[in-house]
Length: 222
Image 1 (cartoon, helix red, strand yellow):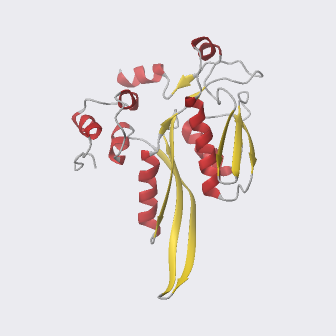
Image 2 (tube, rainbow, N blue to C red; image 1 turned 180 degrees about the vertical axis):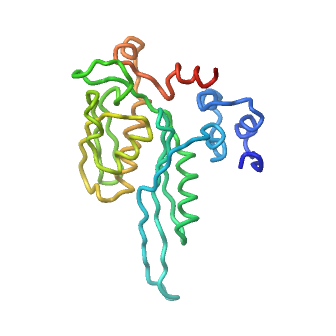
Image 3 (cartoon, helix red, strand yellow; image 1 turned 60 degrees about the vertical axis):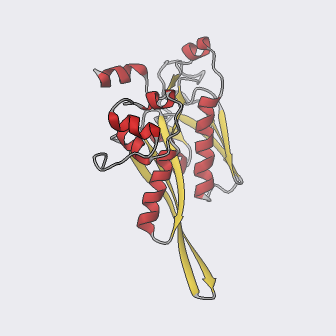
């Protein structure tokens, strides 16, 4: 697909020419990601999942109209994750549009060993307690010791797995059956991991890494 891709943005042209080869470089450029093909080029192996396909029927003067609302998640299972939503008349095109939206929403998250019960130093859980809200749904994610797994609902589990989180405690309120709000609440909580200020001594103590760990990046380049 990249061979037929004609970039329309400055960042896209830099990626196409090979001047930017990683998401870290793309973020450092401070140029906005406005083309899903940029994500395809920087992450050749992404893991995605359709979280929800909801059919909405409405009666109009011309008859019954059917539209679909889709929610998807996409990530590299190692520090980057995105959630997207889309509406459309047909399922297939709407899912593809939703995946593109998820790519454009991809964010870099922090991981660490924030549980006082653990202390292994590996980036396997959230580094500290974070909360996110969307609609009536609010979710709080707390660091968990290694081996606990993802103690959350299936929707949250799918998002956290693709973000690279292996262990977490989750506490939610509101109408969690509304998948789109539940998914966005989890995603908003994950974004908080990178928005909070962390001192160097705290990062070292909690084993915090942001995005892909540097040693993995070095191995990929080598």
